[in-house]
Image (cartoon, rainbow, N blue to C red; front, side):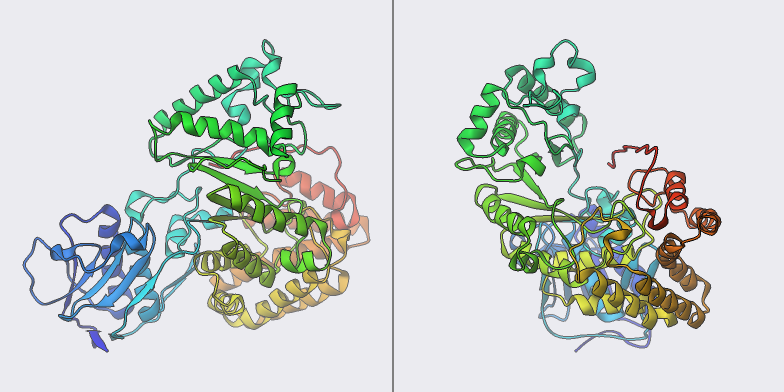
Length: 576
């Protein structure tokens, strides 16, 4: 064992290279800060411009000119922690984020530092730190790891849990991020109908028996020219962005069936043929000028099937979406049971992996029709992520509640779970869940853990979707009664006000179900009014995706189980 701190004193200093990056300097300052917080030990921190005065913890690459490791092999986010022969300690990573990950791993192992959620961080108060004389190292399983959920976009949470979300505002000193200019449907951003459609309807899709213009006509040379000019302008104006989206609009149909587009799709045996051909041409056109820029496109709805005989350009990310799939159990299990949507999705993963060097997945982990209905198939989440890793997927986004007010349905647990599994899918999902619940919910944790198990058991028995109504049946009135009893017991057990507020926020989900089950219209209406005020106190802004909170409450009043909508007005906002 190496004695780094003993009885709140240390003979070590923290040292960075005079050529250290901003992220390495930040990592060193974080190490110093938490040494003081956890061990009450002030460990000096300085540059290697200063002469050695004793034992040192080297934070970052090439401290004192040493080249102890093959840092390139660590990639951008891998790291190592190891003792050196002279008694020094090395914590370093291959790229901007790696060293910072190494520091947080060191503090987690020896100081119990954990960032469970943006407002929940813990560590163990100690007086001494003894480090094993062994090398520790890790690299992420996926190059892109995103929990697409409002509360996961806290920069401190993202970095401490090794997410590199495109939406978290992670500054350069914390290693930056894989920054997208946009990560959404963008055909109409490239060639805006408001500007071109009236004079040039031919720029937009011709579809058999459908309204014209739901997508672009990808074989039109003028469309390509406009899109290329727009794309180059985006790149010039956003030099800090790594990825630019060239992706179809959010429609299940409407792709172009003009003679030229149809011919391309028939040639490659899928409507994705036109999409990949178009994106490839753009990628090839910008490659020399912008060799490090990646283009992002979807394999989504009509373009789900991979083209035959056509590869995506090396600088193209193909993001395969599984919006149609059933949930509750892993896709492998569902496919074995005969689910056609699961079979098709697994087949699509294998086919896209053959033609796309950068295959990403856009997965879904919430009910968009009822944000407050639990979507917590923990085992299925873990098994799916492991499947992605084993079948050539390079990046994963797990979409949750992205509304401004965030989640009130175990969303923080899912964010923490996804962050751990996307870095290292071999971790035990039950252990991660247990650690989170007992780290966040205090004396109420045993009841909250039973609630999580209850949610998983209920949803795993059926075939859930991300737009299920309450009447889907896996959350019946018996479930609601058990869940209500568990939350009441959790609140009775916990007295700390901060922890009680966390429990109360999660209880909103059960209260929503209780009100929705109420048979008496008048009583349900009064309860819904009180629930609205409570949601406002907790800052919840949506209970239905992209829908005014007042409309969601109105539908609760109008019908039992909140299964019908009237006078629906959806808001559309773009998260960047």
